[in-house]
Image (cartoon, rainbow, N blue to C red; front, side):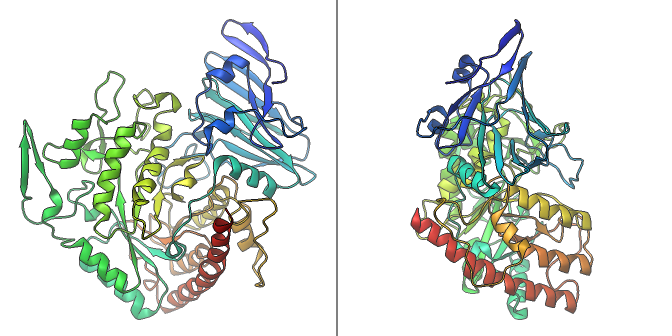
Length: 566
């Protein structure tokens, strides 16, 4: 331990230089306001192994080049780091790291679906240093003052610095040693995905799949949005007849709603047919559980007492698609086990992957569009509550699918936290069919991604292909900023109607992203590759053929080598 522990200004205010100690590996340092603050800091959610953040190392002989200063004022910890002239900051498009719904977001949006209190500073000499505010609380990141980086959040939290190292790539490699890398994806997930809110029937899904094959347009996955459910109730399918009565307990009449179906009369048969035609099937599951007597998910969750609570200890009820909903408290192990069992039963229908949507969690008719900050999470409420809801949700989902040993799991999430790439693929949320959002999608994916291929060892060089890749393609795979290597936007835009020119341009760009999915809203025109005329269809065909080579043949082969090396 070294450095000054600061000077007490008043009983409610302290300031000074942060104390530091080396952790993890050479060039990585942890900073705290004092020894007491270090001991009071909550466990790390972002680190693969939280113990690594708590354990000093003495292998290296370096001391930090930049020492943050702090002020603790009325329960807030304010951290400032000054950098030399010529430094540029990258890696955050947010003012506040606080998971929230952001339909149609733009440059002025202050919070998005995920939280990454991480900034990469590139120095004038080409070196770089990464800074992580390792807190799950609402965190303000202020980069408005030239050459100054500021973090503001409640309670004691450490600052972790990576570097300075000789290049941004070295910083990102070191970051990956702390927060981990993406799970090994199935090969088909690097192909093209087709989705809509919603392909509302078995017949429509089959029609879309058949058209892709008839037109010889590459496509690997068809997605089922929320309308496959019975009344938007998770773990159910749309039905025609009254469900079969299974058991009655007290005031609860428990039904298994998947007994009788209409729009999706036989999901297993649908998935089997998709498989025979070379498609995989992914289904959406939201975390909002309808508050309805007789709904088996609500009944079993209430029996186990696993719902997020309000400040007065009652189950929190928020409005989502089904109406009034309760929410599993994924910080509790019993809630995670309960959810995992539901997912395993659901996946027996032939489900190839799960789509975690609305998991900020999104709450309608709320000013903040999410849960109140004073809600109670009884497992690890001190870790930040709502902020980590999606992180544990994603972890639970991946672990649930891991039980099927004959296939690799696949999970997509809208919300997440630093380190969530260990459990789920990311997309950039509800964008719009505009040129501005096409341009935004490029910068957003670059900020989410990390060095995709060289993630294991500084001595393992994987990007030496005999093909001529453009700088743009190299940048996508080498130089993302937040450790989310598998990400992409809704190609063509989710809201609004794309023009043929916009859609084909977006497909040309989007086909170079690792996660490549066309997705659009229910009240828009069709946005399949053939929906904009022959010229657009041909452009999409060529772009997706190129993707087959770059992503499936080249990138996947090298990713596989990395995991074999590990």
